[in-house]
Length: 245
Picture 1 (cartoon, rainbow, N blue to C red):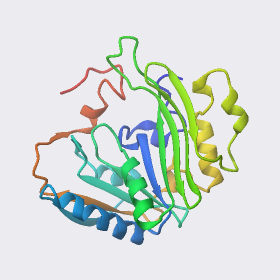
Picture 2 (picture 1 turned 180 degrees about the vertical axis):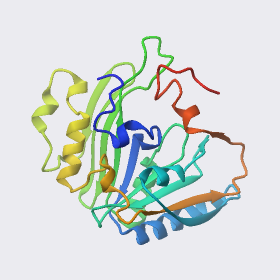
Picture 3 (picture 1 turned 90 degrees about the vertical axis):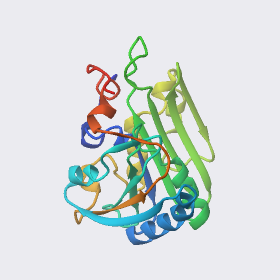
């Protein structure tokens, strides 16, 4: 349903931050240490260093630790323990929304973690294509047996595709539905994750102890711009408001 945020984390109130989620099969301590180890040499190339700090509060307060949002690339990452103690969640403060693709792939290759990239973006683009977002529902799972992609996305029209071997819990019959957008839905994505005991669209899934970690790139030496959450959402997440600059 266009503009429908039902079933999404906090009803989409923190989109675009929550449009995508990185999940690492690791304790929070190992996840933070490995993430910092990977990022430190990368950020040194543009003069930055890495700082870590603990943040506490409810989920709204933890997400607030990512503000302001930034472009052209993020400078803050929020790593959160989850109710499934084998997994840690990651979000970032990119103005266009969390984009965990590179970090999930890199941490799988470098440290051998199982990693999952979860994307759930409602299709809200307006008829003049001036507001809203193109929809995408995707699950990208890096595991010891290989890599599995399941994705339905809109780039002018809906496309559905998969790569890799199906996982045991997939609804393969659904992939034969007439409309590509119906072959992989938000509810199917939530069901697939629940089969792994992962519930990233539920508030209670995150930070059972009310504590997370912000990993920040300090002293980036390239031009960048900061955005409030309202600026990032205007005309995109909230299609009935003007686009703010």
